[in-house]
Figure 1: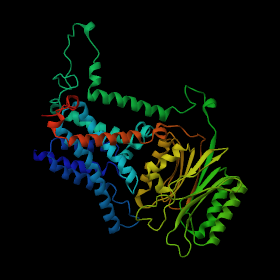
Figure 2 (figure 1 turned 90 degrees about the horizontal axis):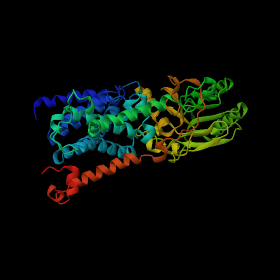
Figure 3 (figure 1 turned 60 degrees about the vertical axis):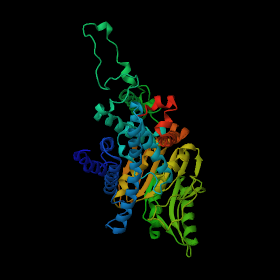
Length: 524
């Protein structure tokens, strides 16, 4: 392998720094994965260690400030480095599987599918077992490209994982088309993939449309991209009830006013938070929640005081009120991160305890049950709550979609540089599960997203303040993801396992099964 190929590694590192992390440039992950595949195509197995190092270091710099607040701490840096090298190891697995394919098989179509299938399969396992949820996912780099964001309504962010990695695989095919043209084409003809058909320009009647090219790997990919982008653009831009050219008086929908009181875990501020709640209610707020752990409850007396005031305010103003508190009595080892929702009659609609405390940072908080509570209301449909880090676990949040939640009320509290990024990646949950999402957060943006990823409110803050947003009263929207969940991703994982298993079988043994040989075009 020429030394010049190793010069790709610094570029891959740089593209990763500005790929999936805090400073994401949406197009860079496509370049990063494409160049990584190009490197893998022309390198030896041993050199994949260098690729893993480049990806790990790139991820480290992409997320370096995740555990920092106002000052940089060595412990936070070391933990980030360790976590990102773990992510780097995960990232390398699909490249290893792809390299194994290149050494054994020569099916042109499969050459562009092995990597996206294994990439998607590896990531779905990561999403289910990772203690940090879906952090690190390349899918989030596509925030802001709405036709792609909408694909998460089909198969969750795994759909975006597949499209991103499939794109890189096809781009790599084009970069290496002379190499891959040595593979046998699907028709069995030794014809270059990109070669144009020879035809007699003097005989227009004999000109045929190149339908055959649509069956090539590039043709299949481009056809799929056109369909998927059309779907995504239509879902984002053509809202229910607005088709076709409806006048505004026919297309307009009722609205609901969502309020957010931003707190900072200070018990002495409790009266101020209730004053802000009353102010939002006087301005027409229908549903009002506080940001995560707005007050600290240290004994039964303070707990009863909080509950009684919340009950009184909700009943007096006829609102749904979600108060948040960190509850820890003397002698208790762990605290409880809670939200309690009161209905307009002052009754408790539900209580919820944070299910996923942030690893290391919230080691003092006891995890709650892995169940999202909800309540049915006559005015606004089904309301539910989850707290901050819970929404990073896309597999956990699926139950909100399965339960057809209309409005998810999310108290949150972040730190340092992660607030903007955190609000962006969590907005994917609204699209996946077909629900409205009110994120009320301190030290990061408070936002409102609808099921189609339209943003109706966005407010930065420094741990104090309030927000009131009037948004369309859209009910739950059924998505394919709420019906089939992660079935597509698990099929990719099953296919990956099957391929890895077959790869252990000696070629001489595989030769006994002609059908398998014909499918894979095994190299002899």
